[in-house]
Image (tube, rainbow over all chains, first blue to last red; front, side):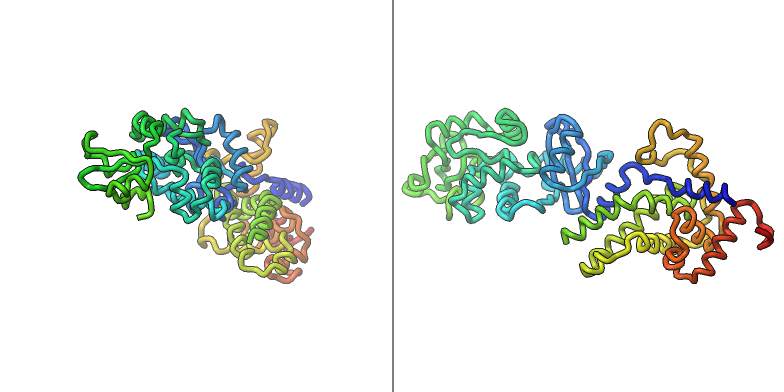
Length: 255
Length: 171
């Protein structure tokens, strides 16, 4: 009888498998899964949960990503094999189709509003920080917008690289510095040279003579116009004085 | 609900080994053990989110989780006999260093499979008493049976495990 009881006691010493607690927490919605995905931008670490993608970073190692995530987002993290379904959505998202959902819990309502608004900027276009501030109803909070974008936990997917300074400087970028920002914008088809030349001359808006509408220079409404049919404006007043109205898509000014 | 999440996380970390071991002893293989353990904690989580704060605070976590786990096992598809021990596919234990040899793991699995072959009422009683080392009162509480019944079932289970199947004779 005694040996049977000793054997049974050993059965009680069994440990749960590696990662068990994290899997349980993930199923209860309290931990996020993550994997590294090969993308056009190179390898990107992406974390997600039931609500959507919660973080993305081009970290040097899994350890670096985990440390950043636990500190910044404050949830547990579980490494998994990259699921094909998520990989396909990520690829589509980076190509400009909007298929991903995002989990922005934990951010302030202001930051959430900034990031939601940033998601509206189409691929191949850019907007100034002041545009975001005005669109979310805090026109004076331009600096706060910059801070919210600098702390974007999901760069590339929430395209904070499409927000630039109104003086034409592309500006810094949390997802890998100014160079990375330029590279991604070029990849998306933004003509950086044209944009910067205009900005250096103080020209912020372009108008098309035939339509009498003025836009931000990257707005796709100007895409078919010939270069000689563009007129450029320093500011809203100048454009309106010339008889132009603001574009209803890129909304360079309140209509 | 932040409080509930903290409580739950601690609950999982504190009891994961114990509940996994219980699952292994009751089902006889590591795959089912993990399913049972996961199911147990997820039920516990749903219950915690519904309980008022003072009930969560006064909860006797160990006994409560054992009761849930026993019910999870009881509710699994009836008539499923324990499968043969899986020799591959399952993950290594947490904290099992290189010194944990394959032999020891195989022995554990074989033992678990033997326990799993016991009739359910003997198996539940003996596992809670001698694998999980609960007191007879705690076992009786977890199983919802009188203490005397539990004692008798434990005794019969030990006899069967010892290979003595010839009724309640000596000893």
